[in-house]
Amino acid sequence: MSAAVDQLLSILDLEPLEHNLYRGLSPQIGWQRVFGGQVIGQALVAAQQTVEDRGAHSLHAYFLRAGDPAVPIIYEVDRIRDGRSFSTRRVVAIQHGQAILSMAASFHRDEPGLTHQMAMPDVPPPEDVPSEAAVVAAFMDRLPPQAKAYWQAERPIEMRPVDVTRYLTPQKREASQLIWIRANGALADDPALHQCVLAYASDFTLLDTALVAHGRFVFDPELMLASLDHALWFHQPFRADEWLLYAQDSPFSGGARAFCRGIFYTRDGRLVASTAQEGLVREITTS
Image 1 (cartoon, rainbow, N blue to C red):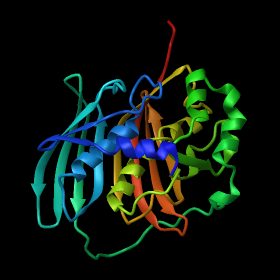
Image 2 (spheres, rainbow, N blue to C red; image 1 turned 30 degrees about the vertical axis):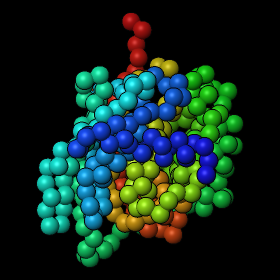
Image 3 (cartoon, rainbow, N blue to C red; image 1 turned 180 degrees about the vertical axis):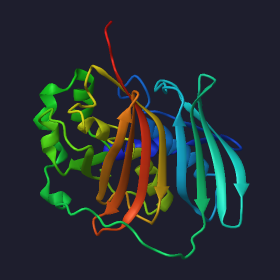
Image 4 (cartoon, helix red, strand yellow; image 1 turned 60 degrees about the vertical axis):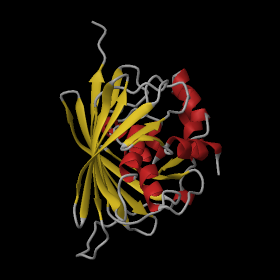
């Protein structure tokens, strides 16, 4: 297992403090704020610790304040309801005495039902698209120092865009992108862990999809970007350490906000999860 995956598993291993109270740490990688996917993943871990015999099927989170990576995050779980089929939890992430994230999560016991799904896009397999290392090398010289240091380091999630030309030119395109993703190492056979890893990974490129329509990039110094909320639905079992196609689009942006959606397919075409997010996309003015 890679050191980056080991680190991801360590930040998802929360410390129980008291009944319904947990503490999580952040990796010390030089960022000024905590990565949103980390807080979502840790909040889901905290909620899972209070539920038995049923898995998460949805979560809805609001980012309230930027997280401080220098101090621990406290997660307080409210056991709102345990029904015969569903359990509902509310999780608040706290730093410096203030909430930085509020999340509702719902858990459902397995049961049969009517089944259908959207077909997976026709794309080349991950082995036939450029590796992450090749993509990073192609635009490394355009990155600011902090972003360059991040991309040069080993990361827990490997990403392989199906079309890399978007990163090479500032051309305006349809606001969509297809990216193969997987954990950069084998994970234990725990469905709850795979959900938390996917929750972590789902925040990486989603807001970036809105910028495709404008020929802009996440490292643009004239843009202020931040996730405002994040929703995730789990449909079927999956492994986050096997390739998943992350198909994303952005139906709308305006008023300094952008709305983005994503769906995850296994390589054999099963639709296993869906996500949606609204984010801040603010142009920075010097006047």
